[in-house]
Each structure stands twice: as C-alpha cells, then as structure tokens.
Length: 297
Ligand SMILES: Nc1nc2c(ncn2[C@@H]2O[C@H](COP(=O)(O)OP(=O)(O)OP(=O)(O)O)[C@@H](O)[C@H]2O)c(=O)[nH]1
Ligand SMILES: [Mg+2]
Ligand SMILES: [Zn+2]
Image (cartoon, rainbow, N blue to C red; front, top):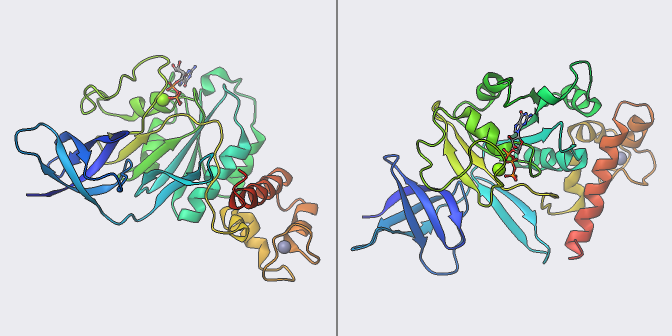
C-alpha cells in the first residue's frame, strides 16, 4: 500500500522521508528521471524484505526555491515553502546584495522573507546597521538574534508558527545553531542524520527538522552566492517592493528603470525615496538574469 510522505533529507539518490504518522524511514527513488528535494510531498511504499521504502511519485509542488547552477541549468533547492529565513550575522560580514536576492526570490514566490541578524552578542549595542533599518522601512521582518544569549527566539518562532520554512545564508552565520536553538529537543527526531550540535559543523545536506509548535525548518548548506531564476529581466522588479511601487508611474509600461526616459523609479532614487544601494542591487539582478539567460552566469 502506498502512502503520502514528505521528503526531509536527501543524499543524492537516497532520502529520508516522514510518513503520515510522523515515523521517519529511509527511502530511495524509483527510476532516474524523478528528482525529489526537501519539502517534496511524495507517494512511497515499503519494499518487501527491505528496510528502505520506495518513492514512486512526486506530487505537484506549490512552489520551489531555485537557483541557476554553473552549467546554466535550474537547480531546485527545496519545495513547498511558506517562509524564507535569511540569516546574516555580525561575523562573517553580510553581503547585502545576496540578502536582497533572497528577498527577491521570496517576493516573487509570494512567500514571507524573514531577515535574521545573528550573533548580536558580538556587536556594540549602540551600533545601527543601515541596511537593516532600510529593510524595516520597507516593512520587511527583521529579527535581531543571538544563539548565545537566546535573544530573538520567541520573536522568530511567532513569525514562523506552523510554517514549513527554509533557513538560508552564507556559511558560518549560524543557521544550524539557530535551528537547534528553536527546536524543542533538537536530536529527538533527527537521529543519526545530523551531527550538528554545539560549535562549528558545516552542513552538507538539506535536512528538515520539526519544531514542537507544529512548524518545520529546513537547514541548508551555506552558499557564497545566490540568484533567483527569473523568467525575464522584467520580472526582477517584482522582487523589489519599492521599485514595484514606483514603476506604475513610469512613462513606459515595460520600463526596466535603467536608461528609459521619464522613469519614476530613477526619479525616486534621485530624490532618496528609494535607497540607492537597493536600486544598484536591482540593476545587478537584471544584469545577472540576462547573463544567465544567455548561459553566461
Ligand atoms: N558569538 C556567537 N556565535 C554564534 C552564534 N550563533 C552561532 N555561532 C557560532 O558560529 C559558528 C557557525 O555556526 P553554524 O550554526 O554551524 O553556522 P551555519 O550557518 O549552519 O554554517 P554552514 O552549515 O557551514 O552553512 C559556530 O561556531 C557557532 O557556535 C551567536 O549567536 N553568537
Ligand atoms: Mg549549518
Ligand atoms: Zn522606470
């Protein structure tokens, strides 16, 4: 009898799935054509005489977080996501352009971006981070966090409640540490998959962990770079809410806000109504997207 299950970890062709009754089993996938990712809902069946289950089908995804890989193809990072938790930290220093691109991806997918600024125990209390102030002005959720002093846990938990969220960001910012902090008993359901605990332990596979409030968090390996996969360069503006807002006043409805005349976005940048760095960031996404569509990324 086949059952509905959720993929909670992938190791090339092998995976770990969570069955409806919350039991977790190892599984492999039928055939070479289908490829499952963390968050995928699948049908699976036990294999007689074996411990492994067999995944027979992947259900249609409500959404997928993707990025282009070096060979110009689209790589799916995770599926069926409600929120994107973008982790930055005092150290390593954030690349705000990458943060913008994650926000852009979330906005286009229609899911909530949450910016977590971790390791604030290492920061002088009086220091203000301009980029974070800018994000707050845009109405984005920003959570100041410290795994060390337990700051921000409650606030973050209340934002994600029973969502299925993915935690992303560069290596060493504290993604795994934050997840462990948030989990009622971090090792309880993870068993032998994750060796993450105290201290440094680079995550190599995406793994979904359960929160005791009914939510799920996907821990993902750190990346140096990220770019959302966009259908066209004109889609980029949908990922920058302030640009979307002003674009309705541009002279041309297909304005890309680069060199076009009577562009309300460029005017807003000149008048400081749009942050200059965010506008630069938008232009970079447009450029990278056209490079990617020419397979040069
Ligand atoms: N001072 C301080 N150190 C922290 C905090 N959170 C995490 N760290 C440390 O930062 C280091 C990296 O943490 P990880 O949780 O492994 O980072 P990660 O983002 O999962 O890294 P990858 O798996 O490589 O992508 C560890 O040594 C943690 O102990 C914090 O709030 N304050
Ligand atoms: Mg990690
Ligand atoms: Zn314009």
